[in-house]
Length: 487
Image (cartoon, rainbow, N blue to C red; front, top):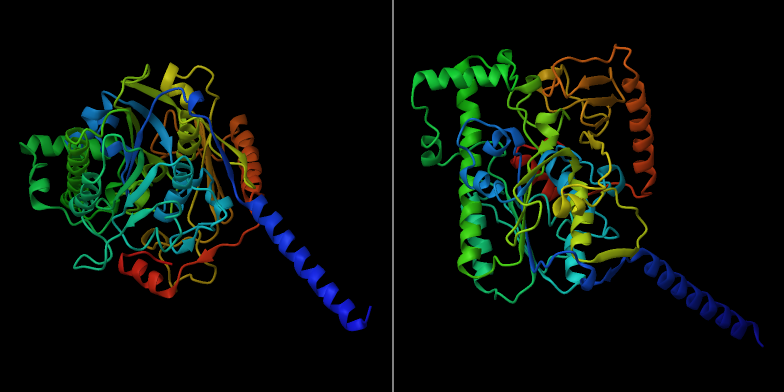
């Protein structure tokens, strides 16, 4: 054989080997779902996932808030399983939603702040529903977090707003309108996964006047009682605001936004019922994270991982009765538990995947009140700040920036906050739920036990993915800045 022919054969062999290597690697990368509907413990034909941006659990009536911010959610809670202590993975919008959709904490999926992109190798909840032949649709209230960040993976319809007078966001009624238009085309025989995201409780607060008016105090005494509640029960730092009036004004604007969203969820629910789409349907209502509102001298989110920012509402409402319906679960759950729970409810298992999901199915809680559900910890982390971005003459309490990384782990009694820069924190959240007394200098054995476990979990999650964070384009970064996000 001539040298030319030999070289040609070698090239062909190399190309063939490369193609087969690519095929094998691609096969390894592609997750495989086994769907066994006969093993599904309940019959569900539709799932509605509602995520409310920046909603603190303790600003809903169902979680003990004294103001009428959530009449519909509260009424639904009476016929739902309510999780009293549910926690998000991170107090930032895109990373938190990425964790809900993948059952992975941000250290693994690498969406560490708004502006990072989810790698397409990750399996999303919407992709699972597509695999089992459900229609998938999403209606989001911003155009900065989801499509740009690849969090739209698996959705056949993904509806986002275009820029308008409110910037790259739209109010809840317009998002609900778009979802209802899509629902008008659905039939009672349709199986679908619908995700609706509402942004309104996010700052800047722009409440509809009638909803703020609905929260007017009936008397000055009622107003004074509420001020005492904020200071003594919610432990809002009175030094954060210039006056009690400023405190009430800001928080009332936030609450009016919550009430507005509550009304739009009611519209969706009632339309579904009228259209005959609410039979055999599961509604999930949650938030991506909370908001500071003056706790720990902070108004927003992202920077801290205290519980006003990482404790979120979580309701599972089955329109068909299940044994645990109308109950409350006092144990710890995480939002990464949502995906494995839905997999279990639908008789699905992941048989091939390069990542080990972090959540635990709480199907046992939904169906028999929790028998066999393990004792849980909740892991959360702070958003990532790029090194070298520190502003000059910074005032730590007044800027959305903090050096280093921050992680926390909590159970029903204690919470440990590990910081790569600065002093660690340790709280007895059973006795001090608003984290006002740092016990890091105590000699409690749980302090060191939780620190060791948290450190091990951080390393485990870091090793779960070799990917580096990917950023969105410059145009999307500018959109994020227009909404007040600091990169």
